[in-house]
Amino acid sequence: MARPEKNNAEYFSHDNNMRNNRKVKALRTKFGINGYAIWCMLLEFLTGQDGNEFKYNDMELELISGDFGVSVTEIRDVVDYC
Image 1 (cartoon, rainbow, N blue to C red):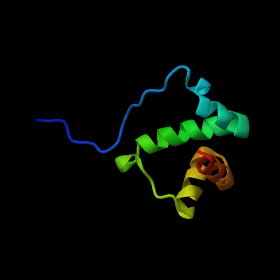
Image 2: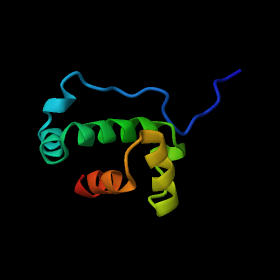
Image 3: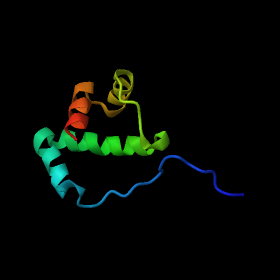
């Protein structure tokens, strides 16, 4: 029997020097370690979602905020900056 087809990822590569990528450095400069943490948690969150995407609306951001332990404003600011 074939393995069931999935529309998400159980694993993704996280390079050991991702923090030194120019764009990630800009994110860290603007938001500090919280910005980097939010970015990494969003990557993890997206890999578990169907099609690696989510609805970017107030309700979903509230749920993600509770999961991440940061405010909706912080998440929105990081996403909008990226």
